Image (cartoon, rainbow, N blue to C red):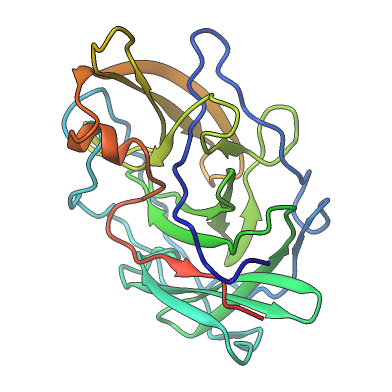
Length: 272
């Protein structure tokens, strides 16, 4: 594993016709190829969360503040897995719906690589993962306008999508039953992932920023990713153009070449 973390020049999945949901791993929570859900904490009593839908609108590639979903639930019950010694941590957005910021953590436990969450309520749960990339992984989390909470696990060439639901970290699956995965510029299907404000709330989108040719600047498109109620299923939605003829230094272009989900910090896998 490399000791130097390289920021991913990411890639979403915008293709002109049938947008590519790239292959990943996993089928159902509990036992996955390369992904194993281990520690969980039981959820406390919850109230129903309203859904919010958005249409094309403001903040095409930005990550400014957004209104929090109403109907927040209680946090996950305290307890769960222990935080490993030497784990890296980062403050992230509210992932269990109680309105309080939570913590993402990453650790190496022997031969296992671990991604975890510690909530403000004191719950700790995690999942193990594997990847062939020699680059240290990193992760960001976010809460979307429909109330779903996600984690993007970045391996430099690809980013895996997870949902935080039921006080567990669960791989989000595509319609083929594989883990939903964003290409990060390696295959050319996209260039970034973001959670911009669209209409009433945040939406998960995949970006593609590509040169227009003949010195005409960049064309930036985004694909809306439609998530199931609990975030465990993802499908490709409409493709929208958000910029044309843009210089490479334009903020719309640079944000379309990142993996980011609003204002949560990024946790970087520690060195063995």
